[in-house]
Image 1 (cartoon, helix red, strand yellow):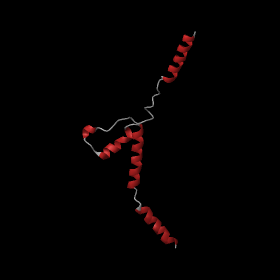
Image 2: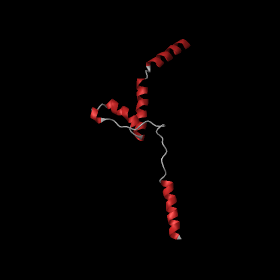
Image 3: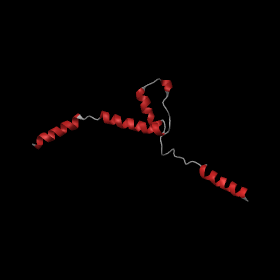
Image 4: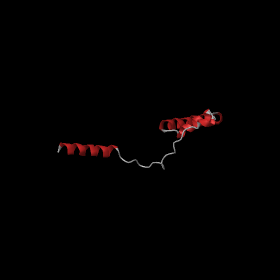
Length: 89
């Protein structure tokens, strides 16, 4: 009786742990790494981080955000604010 109970417990544990995976391909970008056969281009290497894997994808998103911030021109908003400030007085 004890052997059947242990086997039943093991079957339940196995069924809980070894479950079938859900298809998430329609929710995520395909994972692919940088192709080093094309040489080393640091811009493309960092750009490929978005599709390399979970942690690298987050790094790739951070790099994209930093690139957006770098490309943002601070001169235009400051000149706009200075005109508004001068018109205030």
